[in-house]
Image 1 (cartoon, helix red, strand yellow):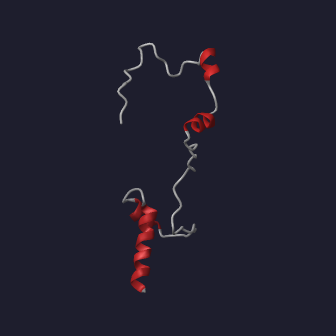
Image 2 (tube, rainbow, N blue to C red):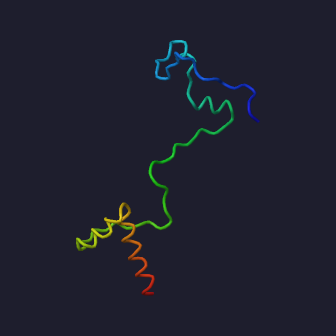
Image 3 (cartoon, helix red, strand yellow):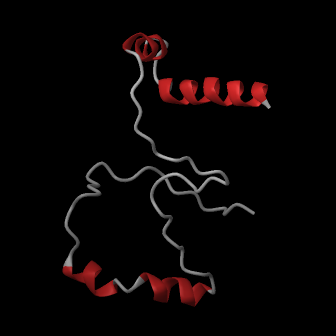
Length: 95
């Protein structure tokens, strides 16, 4: 249920980057206390980067003809993924 109170816009002189006053600093406390008071778990920071995939890829170094690389690069970003798809399709057809 939404609160009946709605906050209006901040005052014209509001500056979110303004330093805290001494009175405001005295009211600060650790986040764990805030969450514990309300009986909710502390948020767990998310690890940066992509989530782990079921099938991981293997990093390889290989030399390809320049015209092959240029062909895939000319189609825009994702050229390595497209090369992988072409190779995967070829492997699937050969089985």
